[in-house]
Length: 204
Image (cartoon, rainbow, N blue to C red; front, side, top):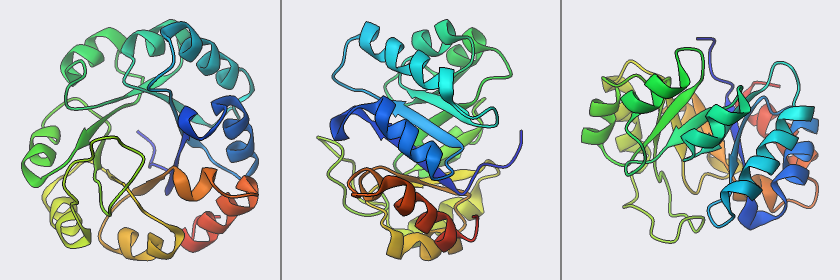
């Protein structure tokens, strides 16, 4: 698997139309994008996902949150799984070896277990307090993130409350990539904010 881009953007429907968000994020240079629509119907999510795939840059990796079925139907998308979603082994069996699969973890023990599973990356968080989840898990913090990054072999995606000012500290802790929602999608100029992130990450 090729290295993960330093910036992992999430087009979350709770911040507006994910299709428009994706257009802006791609314009800013994003090449790893998760499509997230927790409250929409399966049909709505699938339509959004297929529309985004239709204009995504050829080198972009598109991942859908939670829904292995939607990823399978598109023939292209990967999937990001939570702890209560379809187990990674089953998702891998359904999607095959070429699709990207990620798994959310929220503590050291979950991350160690994820390192043994057929996933391409381990998401760890929330690193800082976050309001993008209704019932967030306890904050992990940068020090614990660093411990996890040292203990696992798979690339770690840090997520949860991370703002531009935190970028260097989080990458310095060992994260391969940073997942961002609010700091990007709340910006009045999403492409510009995205480029600022790449500059901060040294990955323009």
